[in-house]
Image (tube, rainbow, N blue to C red):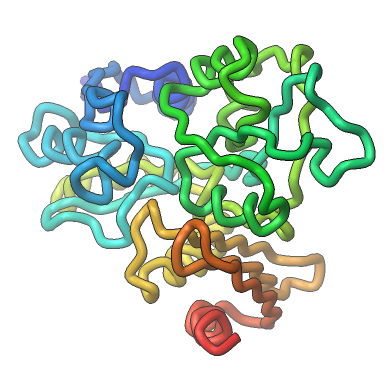
Length: 299
């Protein structure tokens, strides 16, 4: 009898989409599974901005604890939320396809100003809790007012619709996966080469115990090795800079039609500091991350 895999997940709509996607992929290869919903620190504490929460990885720790305790067999995460080093006893066993890695700017139609950069009025209030997004937005329009925003994707869009903000920033991947109606908003779709996303944005990852060879072998059947090659570069830049998920750092890597690796990176010392940008092309990913870090540090 085939073992039923227990999938650990957060309970937000997007996390549940990711878990159901995982369940469907496993079903395709004949593996039954069930969902185990786990609340993380990031879910429980909604009144503080991300930089006020304890620790770097507040959407993953409780799920990783459940893996180590053996109450779940595997976990599904947004790869961009994951530390570059797994806790002892755990490993990232596989990654998914990559959804659109871009950030999108959602603007209330009532405040749109045609002809203005980003179509925002002077002093527009823009909601985001990401230091990376704050830095790049301020780099484009230093007159805007940045305010923290918490909640899942639908909650944030509701806050925008109700007038709490003039605009908000969200990852295209989450909005796309949830197939949310966007007719109420003006949507600016940034290029990831210009408004640089978080390392591994748009990719899911599957985490297991290091010693659980059986589950790790199963997950290899739904693994995307080509995506792994590019996000390894992105995440290595993050690791070399010793950054967490609140470092104002964007890194995006892709392979062009000639098979060359192209990397765009944007980094600030803090969210309200100038942004340094680099673009590097290489025929190989060998030491590519190191080149990106060196360029960011000397520019």
